Image (cartoon, rainbow, N blue to C red; front, top):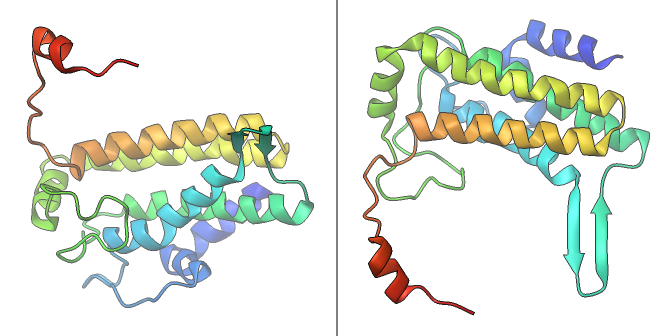
Length: 199
């Protein structure tokens, strides 16, 4: 089955099928019967993106440089499935009034950062401009589609570039809706010059 057919199949089955593929629990549901944003991010987007990001790269040690990439047809096929799941999830994130989720952000890496936006604050931000949030989700999907093409071509470098674009889409959305908004107290240039450590 081609990657495009895989994407269409998963999109057609809807979000519930995408989450079922992840093997995650199906407990977090909104009243509308859709998985909430927290669940989508924790159990679909985050593991799928991590699989793509960790599949290619460069590792430098005292013994030299090692390049990591998929080698077998099975490894490439597994990545194609992860990319398709990620893209299907971005469509689900664009569903109207999808619930944000509970009072915590689950297992995601930055969940315990002081000042992280609450679900009520995130909901308010989304409701203020739903099209902006939908565009942020679509930006991730648009970044993931070149990843599908790279996987079909078995191009590790192209997949790494697509991964960088996906990371940028993730970070820009998190900065807008999730990360703390307090202003950082940066030192003046003179103070920085006096305290900065130099090798």
